[in-house]
Amino acid sequence: MRCTFILLGSIAALAIYSTAAAAQVDPNLQVRIENLTPPKDRKPDLPQTEVVTKTRVQTYTTTETVAVPPAERRRRLQKVLAEKQLMLPADAEAVQRAYETYGIKDHETRKVQKKKVITEHVVTTKPRETTVTASVSSQSVFDNNASKTPIHVGDTVFGTTGLLTVNIPVGLADSFILQSGVSDQRYARLFRKNVDILVNNATYNQVLNLVVPGKTSGTTTSDVMSYSVASSTVYGSGFSPYQVELFTPSVAWARNNQDLGGTICGPKGQETFCVAGTFVAEGEFTFSDIASQQNFSSRLSGSVTWQTPVTGLTTSAGGYVQGRHFTDFPGGRDDLILQASARADWTPNSYVQLSGVLQVTQQFSTVKALEWNGFAAYPYLRLKVTF
Image (cartoon, rainbow, N blue to C red; front, side, top):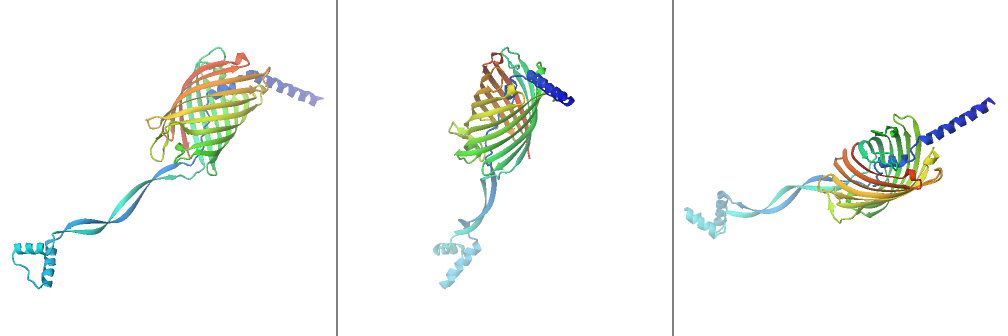
C-alpha cells in the first residue's frame, strides 16, 4: 500500500511539474529562437580549387647576329687567298677590298641554344578532407516586438553562440555534418525570456545533380537533399530551470547557386557568379516533452546574393513563407509566418565574418493572442578556426 501511495504521489508530482512547465514555456518559443538564429547553410561541400604556381626551364633555338672579331676575319681571308695561291695584301685598303670581294663580313647570323624560365598558374582541385571547425558568433538585436505578442514590446536582445562542427566528406560530393554547441539569448528588459540552449544536430547533404558544373564551387549550380535531426534543449538563464526539449527531424531540397546575372566575378581559381540565387523547400516535425510545442511545418524560402566590387563584401535579399500545424495544442493551432530580410556580409579572410541584418516578420495564427509582427535589425560577428 505504501508503494502504491508513493507511486501515485510521484505520478501526481510529475503531472503537476509538466503542467507548470507547460504554463511557463512561451507558446512562441520556437519561432522566437529561430528568428534570432542564422538560417541553416544548405550549400554542398563541393571540392575546392586553388591556384598553384609552377616553374620549369625550357631550352629553345634561336638566331642572332654577332660581330666577327678582326682576327677571325683576317684568318678567313688568309684561308681563301691560300686556296687561290694569292698573297695577303700589304695595305689596309687592299685588305678591305679583299674582304668585300670574297664576302667576308664583319657580322654574321648564327643559331644558338638558350634557356628560359616559364612560370605557370595552374588551377588544381584540393583533396576533400574531414574538417573540424570551432566558431563563436555574437549579435546585438534591436527588436521592436521582442515579446512576440500582438502588443509590441521592444527590446534589445544579446545573443552568443559557440559551435563545434565536424564535416566528413562522403564520396565525390556528399558530406555528413555533426554539430554541437551552446547558445544564449539575453534580453535587456524582458529578462524573464532569457534562455540558454544546448544545440546538437546531424545532417547528411546528398548532391543529387550538378546542374551547371563549373571550374570552381562558386560557378557550380547544384541540387541538394539534406536529411537532418536537430535537438534544442532549452533552459532559463544560467541553465536553470529546465524548460523544454525540441527534437526536430527534417528533410529539405535546395537549388544552390543558380546563376541569375550571366557574369562571373573573382580572381582566378576563386571565380563565382556575380548574382546568384538559392531556393529551398523544407519539411520538418518537432517532437517535444511538452505536447503543446509539437508541430509539423513546411517552408519555402529563397534568396539572391550579389558579389559587390569590394573584395569579400556581398549583399543579399531573401524571405520565406512557412506554415506550422501544432498537433497537440489545446483547442488547435495553425500558424502562417512570412518574413523578408536583407543583409550584407563582409568576409575579409577565412576566420572572420561581419554582417548586418534587417528582417520583417508577420505571424498569423488561428489563436489570435499568438499573432504578432515585428522588425529586427542587428550586427552579427562570427569568428571561426578550421583544423
